Amino acid sequence: MSLSFTNSIAVQSRARALVPLCAGAGAYLFFLYVGDTLLQDSDSFWQIKIGQWILDHHALPYTDFYSFTRPGEPWISTSWLSQILYAITFAQWDWAGPVILTALAIAASVAIFVHLLDAHLEIPRSVLFAMLAVLLSLHHILTRPHMLALPVMIAWVGILMNAADRKVTPSWAWLPLMSLWANLHGGFVLGLVLIGPMALEAIWTLDSAKQIRLLARWFLFGVAAMIAACVTPYGWRTLLGATNILNLGELLSVISEWMPANFASFSAFEGAILGLIAIGLFRGLTLSPPRILLVLLFTWMGLTHVRSIEAFAFLVPLALAKPLGEKSPLPQAPQDTEQGNESPAARYVTVMGALMIAAAAWTSTSVYMSHHRFTFTMDQTPVTAVDLLQQRKAQRIFNAYQFGGYLISRDIPVFVDGRAELYGEKFVMDFFRAIEVKKLDNLTRLLEEYKIDATLLVADSPAAQVLDHIKGWKRLYADNIAVIHVRDDEASAGNAPMSTHSN
Image (cartoon, rainbow, N blue to C red; front, side, top):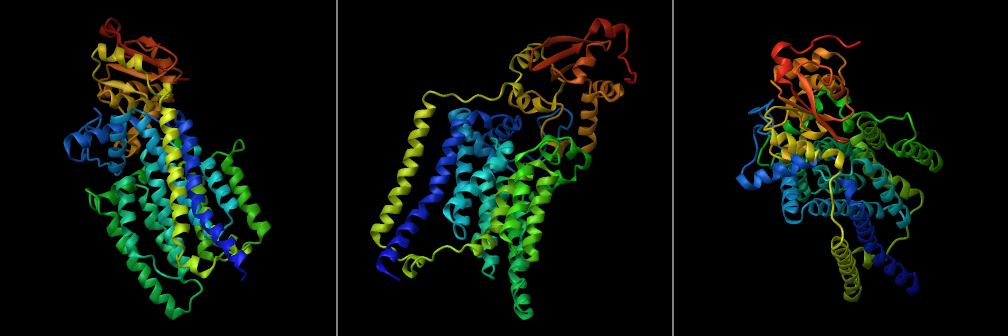
């Protein structure tokens, strides 16, 4: 190998080391600039509120104290650490804090993702896969705990995949990563589930004697990972709390983020699936059965629940990176570079480059924040309507699902909010049927059963229109965000509420 070629490879190696940081910084600046788009889900309100409660009381919630329909019911927060982080940043910098925190999480996700792909693919393809993954995930990139857990998920799967590719067991030194994930978000269950398929990939081409020994070590690692997942303030109950959401049956088909993918019109996800098929056919990829299982699993998850599309976007490329890289292998770095024996000057250049990237990102943040104020999307914040309800001292408000988080942030007990696992399938399905007024009895029954004295509904919801015609209720206020109905004492004194079937 000539000296010039060796030096060229060494220079490329140092340059490649900065590519993940550059990609992460680019993602951070982009989402900082479009930060208002991250503030579109009212769940952010109650996530921050719970984090504030934990900080104020130096304790964790074990029962519900935000609703008047489920007071005292058992409930734990599997995202307590994320909620604390969001609460701290919100208290310091208002909505800019959660936006910056989320943008940093996206940056870390992209940087880790590109770093993992970089071991097998060329730089342009690694960055392209990262851009496509972010594009596919845009609908679910919000100021919520799952974003803080995203870089942990990518790193964990990368560790498992790397061990499987090398036919070894993952180092137990990485188990604290599972504990961190379990404290950030309930999605850590996926990390536990993936240990099985990864173990099969690791033993697939080995002889039977080695298979048994390696599988036993992977089994022990899986047990240790499950124990690590219980290293939370809730202990083993963290596992139960994280899986409760999956037991909501029919309800998962009506909550937008848990709905199956819709291909009525062309979408980026549909394009990604077609592209995945095209890549497999064009490149002539041959995958092992366990790796095929992984790709099918991630695809099924994305098809079943739109919130899982981000897992498909980031994890499928990790599963395909090695097979794709084998079709076009990268030039090998010199042995001294592989072993990390770079000269002090080379390390200095790398460190200085990283510091310059971080400084540029921080400077850009300071300049941008000096003249921009982040605001939550208006259709999730019925400010005027809630002000009026507080003036009237309304106690039991029948609220729209998307207004629950905002009401909690205003210290108003809610009828329902985004914690579907607390309320249960039957209750929330009854609520949605009442809102849609499939049968008028559903609405009037809930209003009477829970002694509702005011309603706060989306302006164009069927229930809001029907309440205009139900005796005993009158419209008090309406704007383009929300409409309020209150009991009409004069009408209700002589007439009971209507209880008829809609046509």
